[in-house]
Image 1 (cartoon, rainbow, N blue to C red):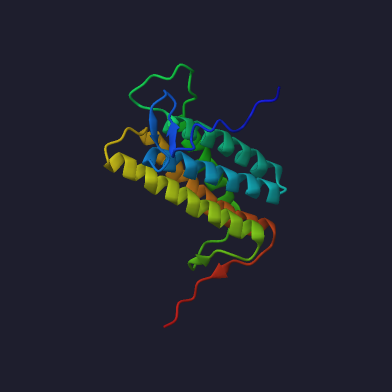
Image 2: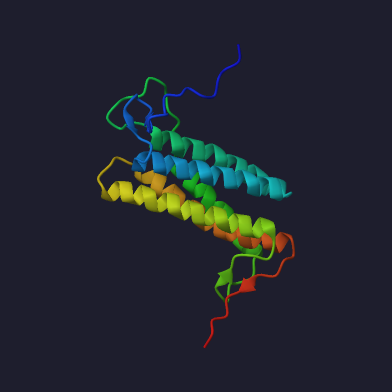
Length: 186
């Protein structure tokens, strides 16, 4: 018999954290990893939109790290999970910084604020950046509420949003799409 995707255990508006603790589906911890899951889906969409193999490989790596972030956020910090959980590492942040630096080497210096747009792949990357910032804000809110969160998760999400901004510019560069400068009314 095939594995059933539905369990009906969440029909009452509760779900379980890794460790078994039941919480409302509106709990900030659920919101945090749900937003990371949304981000991961947008990263997949970006990967489907680009052809450069280096970018595709980096996006795949980011998706893997986002599963790690999601697992960290889904754990009940008061209970040791029965299964071994993957860890986020400082080298994951460094990898994002190195990718940002490499892309910036070929990009023109920014002289204006940039409006999201110009190509679907560029716009999608900006949407992912915004979702990433939302995930970061939720995680910071958890920290403010004194709920356990690994500080490296917040640092990774912060750097990832920077990476996504530069990636949007880089994708536009690869596609030879002009950046849309914001020119405020004066």
